[in-house]
Length: 141
Image 1 (spheres, rainbow, N blue to C red):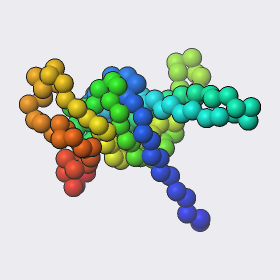
Image 2: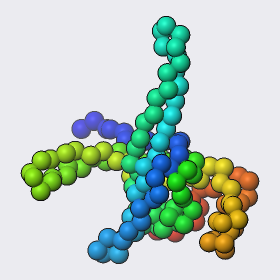
Image 3: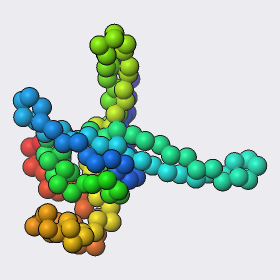
């Protein structure tokens, strides 16, 4: 059997407030949309803007930590894998959905505002550098 490779790296902006929930077994799940914009020049010299949107899913400790610091508008680096699943609606219609399952999330250019300081006593991202969330996770996960 030949080997395959599945890896996604995205840098963009959190486009919606992250949705945090717990599965029935207590596992943390964080879902959010990320928007990526790019510009390119067409053969006739016009500049065209293009936006892409992706659904990101983080699990367990990565979901817990990300939920504490991500918000709509945050610039993030996401590394993960593509996963597809089929959703069946009550009508019987089936739709295939592709999501990025995050393995690593880095908050880019994170700056705290006064409002954020009131919410979060830990000063974990006001250091002027990017923060790698996996540094805060248990090695067992």
